[in-house]
Image (cartoon, rainbow, N blue to C red; front, side, top):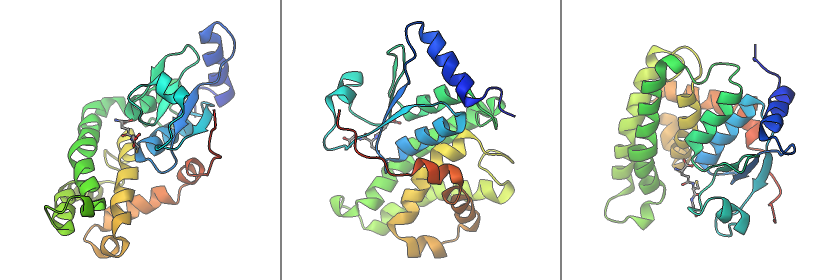
Amino acid sequence: MPLWKPEEVQTMLCQSSKVKPITPILYSFRRCPYAMRARMAIAQSGVIVEHREVLLRQKPKELLEASAKGTVPVLVLGNSQVIDESWQIMHWALAQNDPDDWRHQAHHEPIEALIKDNDHDFKTHLDHYKYAVRHPEQRMEVYRQAGEIFLQNLEARLQQQPYLINHSVSMADIAIMPFVRQFAHVDKAWFEQANYPQLRQWLNHFLESELFKTVMQKHVLWEG
Ligand SMILES: N[C@@H](CCC(=O)N[C@@H](CS)C(=O)NCC(=O)O)C(=O)O
């Protein structure tokens, strides 16, 4: 059972700002995997945010004023505090309300380690594989094989248990899933026949979930 209802979380956020009720603002880009993980954690927490859909090639000045590094997602809180790392946005949202214990506090270290592997080595191989034409030093398959080291790690975990850390969903699953989705989409026919049966099942489970469908709904572009 959630500790608090979403409306109560919202009221608490408003009260803690001690000025006037201000809804946190999320700058997001629909297809960005970092933004997807943040949106999923926010949706799971039930915290209401104002969604501002932006284009990466035409970032609004309000976004750049909030965070000069110019990446999405960015969350601007009612007290003007800015969180501009997806992982921290997930933590912030789930600290407000974590109804299914996605944070798995007892497994904090393996969760962080797996996400670090995803965000560093795997993301690099994924980008090379996805945009192989921009990296002609190697063939596409070479980049794919480099990324497969991470997929093999995930598959081995999922052979033992339904989710990456144990028997229930954790932040690791949510944070990593959008990147495996991208990897799978580079060459769907290859992914469908590759030797990752549990990983495919795990990915499909999230792709078909109401949560994922909700956070992938289209938004009108925010014009400022
Ligand atoms: N470490 C950041 C990375 C975010 C990131 O790189 N987002 C990409 C979009 S998927 C971005 O905004 N890139 C800037 C650009 O393309 O101009 C996070 O976890 O939030």
